[in-house]
Length: 102
Image (cartoon, rainbow, N blue to C red; front, side, top):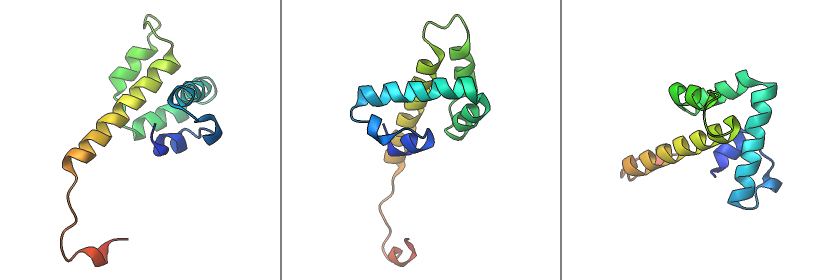
């Protein structure tokens, strides 16, 4: 899972030893946010560009997966899409522009 998601969801880095542990911590954090601060969670999902229709679908009581786990999967899927798009459209640095880089 990407560092930016760990930071966004305020996951403890000590809990992130492997992917399975990280995913469990991620699901737990989303469950906490759903219970205590759903507005903050939905704000994060909006910033991460997770589609509202998909969120509504996984929050439906008839959805076959627990809401926190389903939302975690949506976030990870969207993150993977974003990384793929960045890779696909990445441009090589242009000659002569080095002085304008950070």
